Length: 223
Image (cartoon, rainbow, N blue to C red; front, side):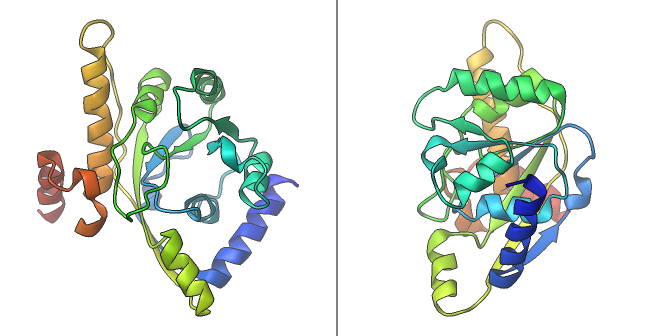
């Protein structure tokens, strides 16, 4: 199935099952960009396809979904890179970087897997690594309302799920080489996750709820 056809199908389904509010996506540049988002449920990928009107999407999808009737189809149509979430998949990272060098819009969830508690998990360093190596600007995106349990409950009651997508400010990630690189990578990951957390309701912030950086960002947003 062609990507345009699949995207049209996904958009039709999303119009039926969800009411999607989008805030700040005018900040998304037309050129190269790395979109990083929290990961709440299986619907996250469909939401991004619903709102992103681009065909140069570079997408990493968990290997376990390769044979899934819907997410496998999305992955194949988008020419996704199949990623092993449970180990350092350097082959996949090299393939992602090669694609990014050709240009496009890379979408990744730094947490690596969806949260089962509807709150943020500790981010992994892969997204910060990709941002620093590619030089792509980073656009943090916060999702609410895509939790599997909530979406399923609404479907059973024939109610549309209320989903909100909020985009933050673009910024760049620079990681120095040599000594201190691992610490810098961790700090860059925390910065990425804190920027997402500051755009979420408090109950969604999870691991990052009490980070001083989140409080600083919230103060800046309020001023």
